[in-house]
Amino acid sequence: MSASLTLFYSPTSPYVRKVMVLLHETGQLDAVRLHGVTLTPLNPSAEVNEHNPAGKIPALQLADGSVLHDSRVILDYLDQLHGGEPLIPREGAARWRRLTLASLADAVLDAAILVRYETFLRPEDKRWDDWVLGQCNKIDRALAHFEKSADELGQRFDVAAIGAACALGYLDFRITDLNWRRDYPKLAAWYSSVGQRSSLQATAPAP
Image (cartoon, rainbow, N blue to C red; front, side):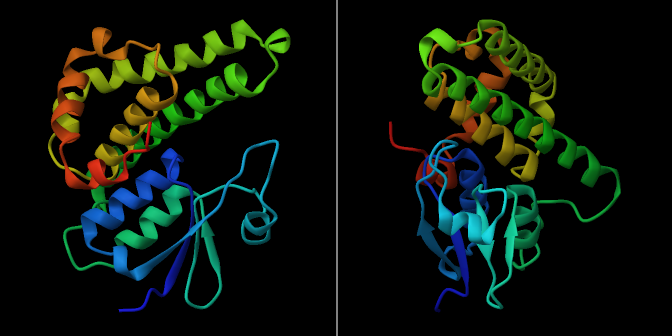
């Protein structure tokens, strides 16, 4: 089957990784062509900007040439294309709860990426330690919530679990001095178990 969708993609992007995990879980990998791009805030991609004015990935080009962007939009779109059990509940309280947990996972990613930019891209003499601390505090508050919700996360592997797993994977990948497993043992145990899934193994960024 020829791919009818094109995903603007980088294997190190945790937002892209969420989309890739869903494609693995729902058996849709063959429907999507991966188009690799390299971009940073200082080196945007003209090609990406043409399709997504925000200049961010993932962006998903549909068969008619239109483009979806923001991982949450793309996940929702792809989840409605397959015939299996939805990974985003379609209605009711479960939908809003799981989307809220997924949003909290995105908040972890947003804060972690800001820490990465501040500590890696910004010249050392211009770094703002209080800014980094503020972002780390956001991460800690979110992880504390996930610690209390670890049993809930483990109920099924859906949009909430995908988001949380990709967020924790990004912390391990880019903020290696954050010893979150020490402070959040239930979350660590959940992540250790769910990390054995083939979709997460296949999408893990190379160290």
